[in-house]
Amino acid sequence: MVLSRRSFLRTTTAAAAVVAASAASAGAALQQRGAPQDPGEDAKTKLALNLEMWFGAHPFVERIHHAADLGFQHFEFWPWRNKDLPALKTAMKETGMQATQFTAWGFSPGMNDPKNLEAVLKEIEASCQTANELGVPMMTVVGGNDQPGMTAEQMHGHIIEALKHAAPIAEKYQVMLILEPMNIRVDHKGHCLYGSPDGVRICREVDSPWVKLNWDLYHMQISEGDLCGRLREGFDQVGYIQLADHPGRREPGTGEIAYGRVMQELWDLGYRKPVGVEAYPSEEESKSAARLRANIVF
Figure 1: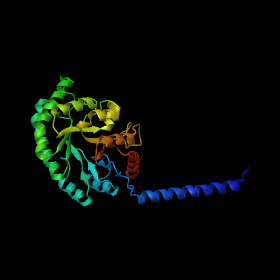
Figure 2: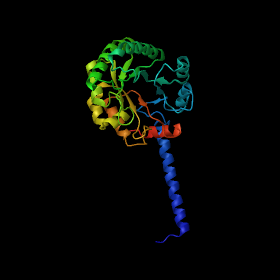
Figure 3: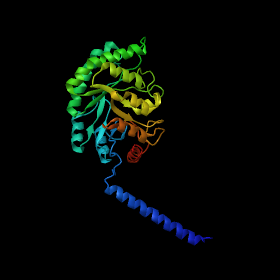
Figure 4: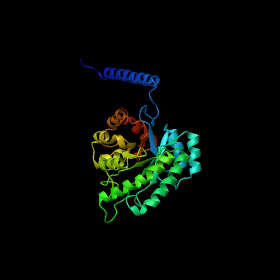
């Protein structure tokens, strides 16, 4: 049978109309079933945007409102000392946004040098007080950059001792300390702690429910891969999960990580906390948020 050009166009136009009608019907059915429509919150995986990395053209407090406008309910940030805490609290109250975690101790001076122990403990106590003021349940602590003349084993030993001293402070304020291993191949050359095995071992030696890992899947992908297998091996020490795709440290859907599969593994293991999005948006934030959500569903 030979179709004329006019008959062909009539046929394809009709077929397209059927497909469009079917898609609209399916979308309506999903909405009736209560499927999440916003770009920021999946029915299972709740997301916490890192507002140091998103909405960077705006003052920090305004970023809380912008994240809320996209449907997010949680956020995270880095240091608290450069923040207007009263304004931050007001924005959280106005939007209903909750902060999941912030950074209490950074790269330098290192927690891995015993001469810094007194300063570490003093700052962790001050940070715990701030966390209580803001209603933040966790705080990231960083092991530190390499110390001249020290082996990795020595530096990790000092981190263990610092965290053993810090654990009672964390328990006093009911704030979990989450130690973050990094990667040294791309982002943090010269940092003393990378990959999951040493992080898991350190937390197991500290042996406190108030000291766990900030398990950043981006860093772990670069350092060791086998994300699901490593999570199964060390899940008892997971305090918090962060993500970004690789390469590029952008939102899921821009790189090589099958995040739907990883989120399924975390769900099966019992993880129910929000997941921190410590990733730079690859384009305008609403578009990146939509891609982020679409690529973590399972």
